[in-house]
Amino acid sequence: MLLLGRAEVRELLDLDELIDALAVAMADLSAGRASVPARIAAFVEERDGLLGAMPAYVPAIGVLASKLVTLFPRNEGTAIPTHQALIAVFDEKTGSPVALLDGTEITAVRTGAGSALSARLLAREDASVLAILGTGVQARSHARAMVRVRRIREIRVAGRERARAEALAEELGPELGLPLRPARSYEEALDGADIACATTHAAEPVVRRPWLAPGVHVTSVGYGGREVDDATVVDALVCVESRASALAPPPAGSNDLIQPIADGLIGEDHVHAEIGELVLGTRTGRTSPDQITLYKSVGVAVQDAAAAALVVSAARESGVGREIEI
Image (cartoon, rainbow, N blue to C red):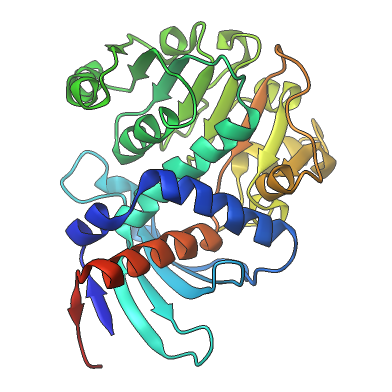
């Protein structure tokens, strides 16, 4: 059984390959070929935390895997990530365990890559100004991924603490070779942005309809609270990874969609498409330059499985990792 740590996963996971692999996995999911049961979780109420289990079989990639992931929002601002995970990979023909790898890095990178895939499919071709809302792991992941799918010339960063936004801008600017500007507020960051990535644990919306420019593509990966206001959801062309997951009760679904449905502002049919349907061409995407598009992500196991398959394959080819007996 191959054992791979976080540093090895970071070295082996190619972001461009991952975005392409996610397109294959999402198409398999929407076509009904992938097997992905509903996410389950054990809740640690006194810490607002949970331990979730996310198994998946993706025949198009030939991967059978399961992730165990913890979400502890109170870790934000500490040295311990809010999301931590392990992924076990099994032989899809025999069921034998073949690899155990860090899933924390995969969770971070595949989430940004999933949003980048949505931008490839939904953002305007001329999108060049990117707003990043949040200053944590996912802010970094999204900035690195979005520059792969659109010609970004400017990135604005906003968070609850301006000092952290400034630090993030100083960190990522040289890495990406782009001007990163810390904004004084979420509203300022969103002003005139072509792509907006909400990567927060916000309880109240950080994306509000009056702050959005015509034609913006919004991605939202926050869980538990609300990142996007009702007016944006109502006005936007809404796309998700999986209707079943996005509209499911906790620990799977999205309050950004479930709440306006419960309030009678939209129906379930307001969810226009799954990302896999856009890949397959069974649903259309953007229909005009001024249309607002929204990708609401809750995370689905086929994404983790696809990423793990890439890492294990690269490790085998390069001889990275340790073989252990269990």
